[in-house]
Length: 354
Image 1 (cartoon, rainbow, N blue to C red):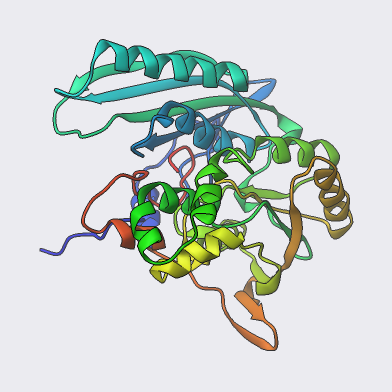
Image 2 (tube, rainbow, N blue to C red):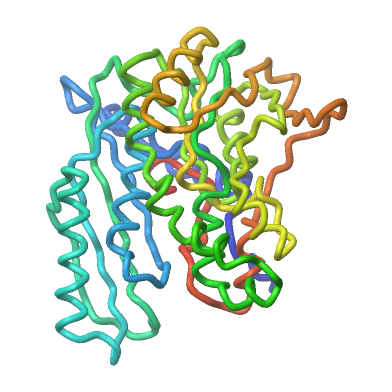
């Protein structure tokens, strides 16, 4: 018997599994599909948007972290996060009353900061864990004429990216591999800055998603996570039935992220990239959004264009053109092959189950 590797299920495998799950409820506008970030349900005058995401990253910020990644999946639907449910699993023999009190205090603080209501969940002490796990479910709502999907890209659209990559990956490497990085000659200032990426420039894509949707008719948005920016671009193309032509020099690679990836021989294009936002929209409107985000000190750049499907997904690097790589296993999993703390390995995006 062969066992599946750590990381994403192959997209074809997941798609085959999802195709067996017929959704008979006609109110389900977007159900489980590879590449889509959240489910969409027709509630009459508006859409309810739902997603879920577990966090197993060993950090005091686990509650805050869970809010961010779940809210991102709502934001890329053009929706506003409203309600959060948290299933909290705590390790046996390692959890005190004070630990629980502190975790819930951080959870409530994170909800208040995001103006999200904590409406339910479950909490228990369980065996077999060495750190807390928070599995979140976020619900949001959006006006019917404002819904955005991963699969809405149109031929001729500009492909736009915010912030840089690998934002989350660099933060994880810096936080979990500091001693090894120092031993490999990485400067303390680089490690320190990368540790702070979760807050600055920040893991949340809610601000830029809201601004873009207010100013423009955004055709598609996607939250790149495991498999990095390259895999997320493939997911957008597959969901929309289009091709992409991406300029390698225009993909914003955070300098610290490149240094940390280089230290372990990882490709930044395939390293977990939460915190960046991908969107497609008309070139004219893309220019307006880029300038508006710049006024809010949010980096945003044009990185390519949507082309017909038969042209495939290509990466242009100077005079060279090649297939855009896809990473079935996130690059960062190579650092934790023998175990360790990180976010839970995830399958390719399927609506409501990132």
